[in-house]
Length: 184
Image (cartoon, rainbow, N blue to C red; front, side):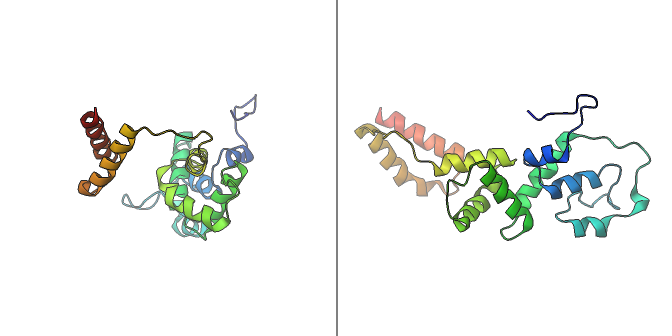
């Protein structure tokens, strides 16, 4: 739980950073408080400060008071995590945040970058991305014993996988279930 000011309930920027909020996501969020892009078709997502500065126009300020919606901040953060490309400052920040959470497991930087680039669209925040990396990269501590029946089911599933076409969780689940029922 993040500490809040006892008098106002406000958060510090450093606390948001500790929560895994990227600085560009926070900038994008603050920009959108009381301001909107010029056209209805325009997206409210800006991937860097230059794009924000180019789009900003004082004529688009709202007269109403700004409403701080933390769900909107997390929405922007998710979009900035998903948009981070290897070699960008956002991607480097994501890697640093993951390292701070112990998710690197002492893997080389290039390998970590590859893993993050592969997984980042599947996770909505830094903490869940860190847990996903740890789950994937950590080997089980106990040896798994596979019975002959389980091995037969696994071989049958492996043989049938190419027939599925698109690998979707539901179709794979149905295939495994059918093979288990067939094996008894």
